[in-house]
Length: 138
Image (cartoon, rainbow, N blue to C red; front, side, top):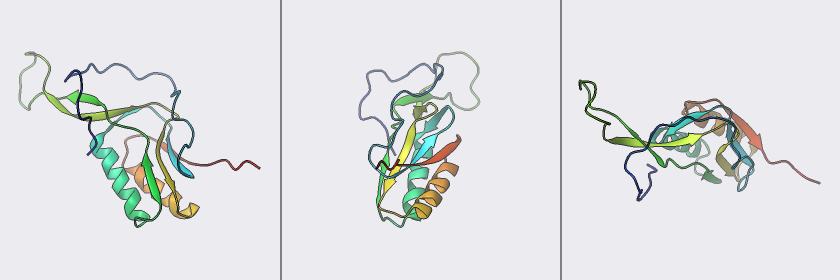
């Protein structure tokens, strides 16, 4: 699963995810992409599940790029613990995603196959997504 090699601080505040994404809005590597339509914190496990669904459907043909990285730790207190006594230990990693962000890119497969693979990957994620294609200029 994806996780940073090293971080400056073990724990981070939740914060609030507001507004639209300003970077990663357009396809940079592949011909097809999966774009986020709403705000979410995507868990590293969900990203991995989506990646596996994607690559299994295209039978390891073509290339896949993951355009988001889970670099924010989330914490969780143990079960059956009373309130108080501080913040719990880090539990996992999430990627903070705002609307408009490209999550996955793909090339080397026909469009119907890419569309279906992206649909399957989108079902693994806890947010609404949209299939996008490269604009042909000419």
